[in-house]
Image (cartoon, rainbow, N blue to C red; front, top):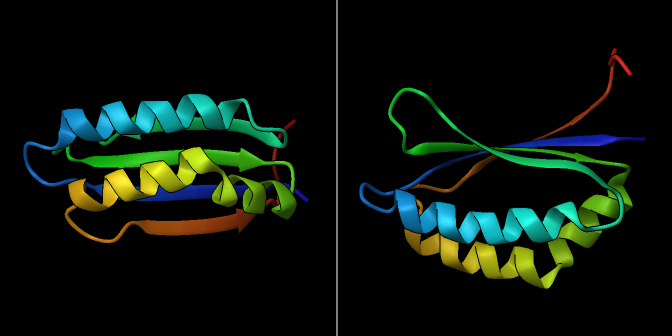
Length: 99
């Protein structure tokens, strides 16, 4: 069963560019993982310091593989110093989704 993850990260003032640079490395590597159907990074239009990861995985095994990947771990370490607070992470499953 497909799993969608939405993660919200607010970064410290002035850390936006460094966060984007670190995130883009993770995004590119994540898109190449088996079981990742899409992995996108968005920025909230008001405020510009809140970022949204929109991720879709084939199943929970793909989520677990992503979380164990070296690029995800490296990004987590980098983001820890750039984030203003702990990320808010929401895992969801499909109820009624168009193809």
